[in-house]
Figure 1 (cartoon, each protein chain N blue to C red):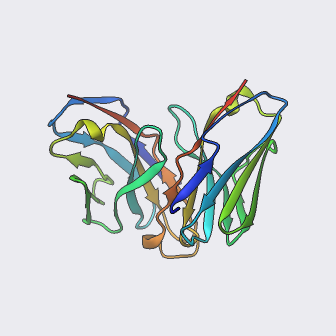
Figure 2: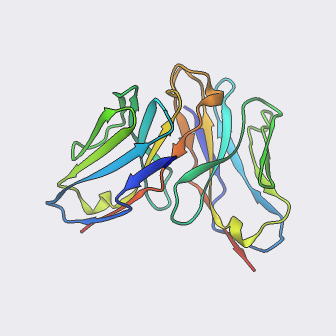
Figure 3: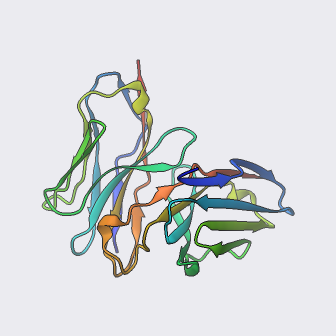
Length: 113
Length: 119
């Protein structure tokens, strides 16, 4: 079945450092891929998405490219801020046949000033 | 008020209590969901309601009982819970159901969650 694997956290960085959070997936067909972010005390909110291979999703300085050849959707940001401290979830939507949105376990990012 | 609103934000209950969690969305969405978020575990989908009808129950114990009186409101009734049920319970909604509709528009909007502690 479909699955999502994220790198384990916590990831601790200094402000202005480069961020990469790895996400790989297993799926049949052509899934859509998402990154959600959960700030402290809040629910999840969509950060970015990509619906087909080679698409790049971007938002708030974050980017992720849908790589079908490596089944990956790694999240990157060139210069993190303290306000980026949150839990990041990679998610996969397989198809409208099953209607399943599969989440990874989440990666905690801590950015220190 | 817009978005998905959950109440209460925090709830402490004993194992013999009966309580309810409430979720309300003002987005005109047609599908609503309950998720359970526990530490160091992936989000667990509990229930799905499409157009007010329950379409999914992911083997959730009967001590959790959902109710969807209309497309804007979703409840989770709790009774005789166990300490391991302590978690953050998240409500979400989407414009259309995830099943049977094109995926591009089916982004979930989440509430802030209800933090449940069972003593």
